Image: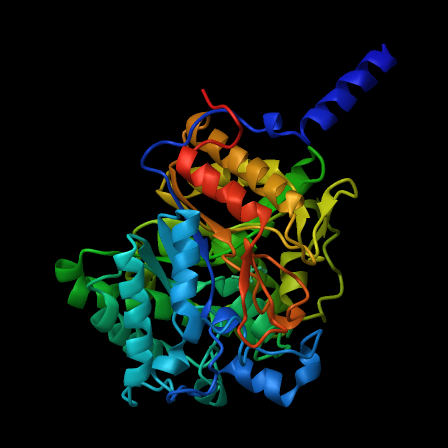
Length: 495
Ligand code: NOJ
């Protein structure tokens, strides 16, 4: 009997290495496929044509050891000069849309509300957008993808509430200049990482370590800035431009490590402290109650006169609530979650101790080149179901999903990743009734992977960073993704 069981298991494991493991159902006709990049990761031209310095320029130039290979985005993929090549690649892939981000300091070198706008920056994005439109590729634009103008950092960065005003000015400039052609907007990319990694644990620029303190102030400003931009769009542009505005938070799928109530609560808490931190104020009103209660209580025990989690006024709760036209999610991987004993020692001030869970990967989950990313396709389906249920069945855009390796054109593991994750997306749509309408592969091409430099590759196209011409070459995954887009099918034969 055990031999039978073993053979069945072995068979299914072997089968799952083949295309047949994925569903042979077909994506609905309305479903759109795209790819993504971000300004600092691909553009280069860091000081050309009037662009101002941003926090990544500053960090990489002043502290090169921050980045594993001591590289930077000075040239990156040189998309500032090679955007037509990028659009040609998009055309070859056959994508419906291209998600890219705007560099705030290229458009407004000082970043400050009321400060000069850089016409060369406007021209660059107008040209890129026009090239996309000419090729029938829809632009999906991220207004902020981590490259804050350095001047604003010198004003204190996101923990300074004034950023809301500067961001509103920036958003108005971009809606006004690009809104005739751009109908889909994301205000912020992965706000959790901007605040937790940028101001909490110091893994990304500006590299501050003020966990449980400045990072909460950061998110408070950022959520208000998002809502403000949404209202600017609503009040000044929507009638004429008829577009849609959202925000793209990220999370793991957090799977309870056991069926125990405490592990299930811990997993839900982790989802609320990551995705819910941003989505709850925007979809339901205010921070998740579990965050408010825990941080209020711990702050009190620690002797603070008020909570370390700032409070929204009732008017702010109402102003922020409903500022979404769709739900966006960046998702790559899964973690198991286990409840932790409540800490008796409350001296530790940090987001992690406020959340208080243990997380871990299963050893059997396939590794990628990124230590934080293991391949767990079923987590995508569970996450989509959780999002749909928790936020009242919204339209969902997957704004990032992908996997890293260390290079090579025969990237079969990336093909398997896409096939199996997309299979779970499709099952969530067709079998579970989740309203996912877009999928975005990260990334169009290998690029500057933040503190990992050029050591981790996510692209469908490889870029030769040793060659000043930055030539691009398609990988096997580009041809797979392109066949998925044209057939709307993941395997050789669909139903
Ligand atoms: C998250 C970010 O949005 C993107 O900039 C990054 O390169 C990818 N995920 C991979 O880490």
